[in-house]
Image (tube, rainbow, N blue to C red; front, top):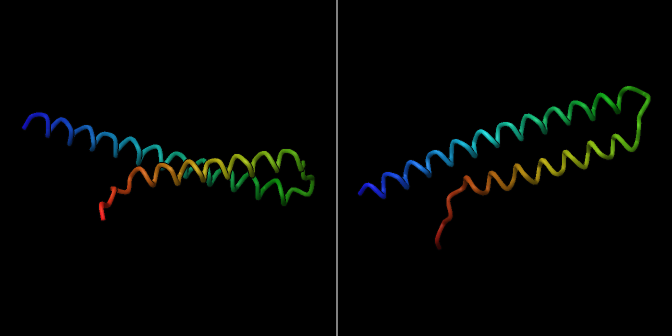
Length: 77
């Protein structure tokens, strides 16, 4: 019985940590989106910097998807 409670606690703790990580990644993704938009509208566009920001944004999106998949419980068919 104690093992089950410990496992449940760890699962709950892991979920909280994953949700926190997800919120941070989503915020960073939004911040990058704002930075990209500002750079594009500034008139003086550094194409290399723009490309790097977009690549980082795509990487963040991949990380967001990985965390979201970890939060979705496995369904055994």
